Picture 1 (cartoon, rainbow, N blue to C red):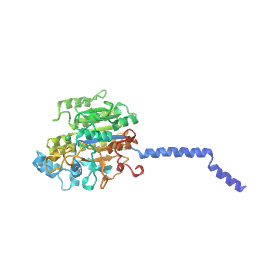
Picture 2 (cartoon, rainbow, N blue to C red):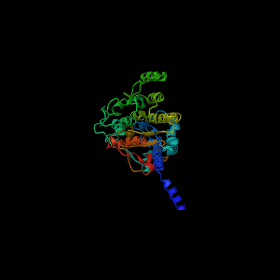
Picture 3 (cartoon, protein in one colour):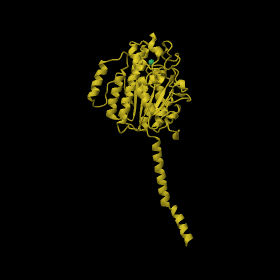
Picture 4 (cartoon, helix red, strand yellow):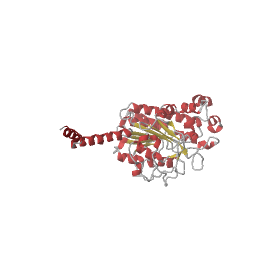
Amino acid sequence: MQGEKKFKVKRNVFTPVKIIALCFIFFFSSFIQLDAQHKTKNIFLITLDGFRWEELFTGADSSLMNSESGGVQQKNILKKKFWRQTAKKRREALMPFFWNVLMKNGIVYGNRSLHSDVMVTNKYCVSLPGYAEILSGSAQPEIINNKPKQIQSVTVMEFLKDQLHLAKYKIAVFASWNKFPYVVSKVPGVIYCNAGDTNAVDGKLTGRQRLLNRLQDEAPSPWDGIRLDAFTFYQGMEFLNKHHPRVFYFSFDETDDWAHMGRYDRVLEAAHRIDGYLNLLWKWCQSTAQYRNKTSFILTTDHGRGGSNDDGWKDHGSKIEGSEYIWIAIVGPDTPHLGELSNTKTVYQKDIASTLAKLLGYDFKKVSPTCGAFLSHAFEKRIR
Ligand SMILES: [Zn+2]
């Protein structure tokens, strides 16, 4: 009898009902696991046009602050603001929020002094080919300069709009340069893009939008087709407040424009202002339920520039040495807090699109087989 009883108990462990229940638990726990692996539900891509890795990692350059080439107008004021004895202190003076907050929550590739190189793969090292590479995940053969030409590959913006079934205002681009509509999508107009002097036109305008529209018309920048970054930022913030998009791209331009004009002081001021915008944007995310601890930032630039020895820093292009080196920072709930990376293998501008998609749990290679690989340091070890 006793033996029979034991046998019965053993058989009870594997009743069909229990097996089904166990399968259910396993099935749902695997879902939870997957969800835990992708905490990112919203993405912000942010670019600072032609902002050198040298300034990002070492702050203000004394040779440019003091030489005629730097074109600095008020040296003492600039020095007080941005000159410090060490590179670490200088970069924190230039971009305090980036270094003191963002880099405690993420990673940055590109400090060449620490053997971390990021390169563009397009041969041109100018803006439109750079943005095309960022957004499509590969160098685009038909985009060889800044002349307007519609991109011929599906971009990661179009891919995510499709995968996430995003309505019109749930994915958007706000850019200071008016050429962005050519590179944000293969099919013209499918991604909401407010670029250059475009006014806000997203339904019933708020009072602030009406004022910003008026001011950006009445306070033009010194450059044709480019508005001042302040308008891009505050127009973008108003859009964010209204529509709560899941995928959003801010493209700032003044870090490049002032360099072309030979005003190093204005380059530093522009970078410092953008750092302040990052602070406001991050705080806005952390105070909004949809975004709090569910949002990743990818920050980068479209190209590098020449060195500081002569006038090289003012320009960039295939013939200007150094223009091929850029940097990439990634911050968010899926990214380890490693800060500044060192001794990494070379990574590329074309890797950004895959990384952006991967943070949201999607594989961009499905529609773009030639795109770069996702950046492995951006993810916790378990999903590499
Ligand atoms: Zn430029």
